[in-house]
Structures are given as C-alpha cells and as structure tokens.
Amino acid sequence: MTRPWRRPVPVALAAALVLTACGSGHPSGTATQGPQAADLYAAARRSAASATSAHVTGSSTTAGVTSTIDLVGNRSGSNSRVVLRTGDQGPVEIRVVDGATYLKGDRAYWTKQADARTAAAVAGRFVRLGGDQVKAPGLTLSSVLDRVFTEEELGQVDTLNAKVGTATVDGHRAYVLSQRVGGDGARMSVSTDSRHDLLRVDGTTKKPGTLHFSQWNAAPTVTAPPAGQVAPLPTR
Image 1: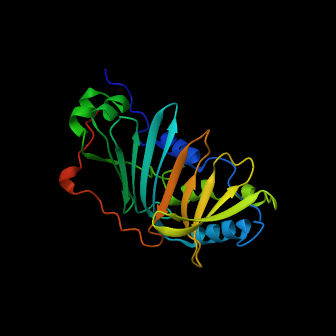
Image 2 (image 1 turned 45 degrees about the vertical axis):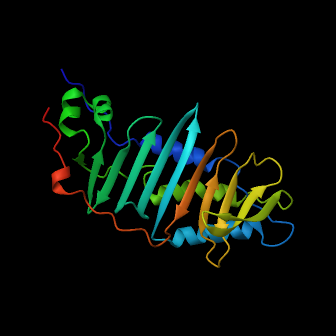
Image 3 (image 1 turned 30 degrees about the horizontal axis):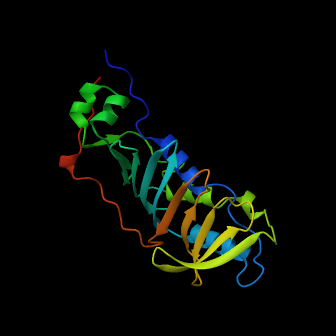
C-alpha cells in the first residue's frame, strides 16, 4: 500500500534557511561619521523594493548541517528557479514558468515524499505540480526581501551603536553596516553607488548564514524544462 504524498515543495527548509541567514540584530541607527547607517539601510530597502528581479544565493548551518539556496527570478516568483540542498542530500529544483510549477528531486527525495514506485518513475526528472506551489516563505525574491527588510528593524534607531565600514564584497565596493556592541557578527553590505543595492547579509555567530544578492533588475528569464525532461506522476 502506498502512502499519501507529502507536500512536495520543501517550503519549511527554504523559510528556515533564509531566516537563519538573515540572522538577528540587523544594523540600524546613525554612524558617528560618514554615511549614516539608517540612511544606507533605508536606501537599500527602497532599491530592493523597486527591483523587478535578482539572483540570491546563500547558506546556513544548523547543528552541523549546512543548507544552501540558489534563487533567480522575478519579484513575485511567477518566473523563477530555486535550487535547495541540505547536507549530503541531493538538490531539489523548482521552476515556475507561465503559471506552471515544475519540481525535480532524486530517488531518495521522492521515496521520502511518496514511495519507491514513484521514485523509480520520476527521480531525476521534472514533475509538473498542480496549483501555485511557490508562494511560500523563502521561495520568492519578495519573501526573501521581506525577511531582510522589516518594519520593526527600521524603527530600532541606535545613534551610538551603529557602525559603517567599507570593504570589497563579491567584487563590489561596499558599505558594511554592523553594530558596535551586541550585533554578534550580523552585517549588511550595500553598494557605494547611488542605488545602494543590497549585496550581502551575514547572520550572527550563533546563527551562521550568508545571503549574496546580484543581478538586480537583470536576472535571466527562467524557461520551462524540455518536454523530454518532464515525467508524469504515477497514478495512485
């Protein structure tokens, strides 16, 4: 007897990974000299809010197990590709194109989600899922940015504790926002140009994780997998 399918899209993993990578205690406030941290944070938030697309990669480690995410696509997730991996498990790839959601996992993934029969039929190939499966925390650019930029943190202004430094981050000159005391390693890096695009977010030492942002407004269009790579789920 086969068991019922679980929800195939690993939304809990994506949400947890993004939340951990964002960490806690994002810097806000005013630097004692030079650019103001609060202004840079607000500018990066405005830039992200106006962006139509981007590429996000990241990783986080919990209990010695590292999870990764690679997300590219438009803001709403109506055209996107997300690849998730946990530890030594195989990757899970999700594509959303023209209102259709496609998911690809390996044999171990489908055995866990369904059964050995299903795994034998679809492992390593894409399965087209019914309904809108991608509107979940961590699976769209919008949901990732909502976790990075929160209204709560915009109101936490500490005029003495904020610090703004400079560094080269992922090949770009950047302002690095952090806290003098209590930040526990959390950092946010934004570009030094007039857009102040978000480049990187680092979590705390207690919740290590990093998110990298690139290709703002220039992410490539995601295409549906070729028909030959799409397999139907076996009938129950």
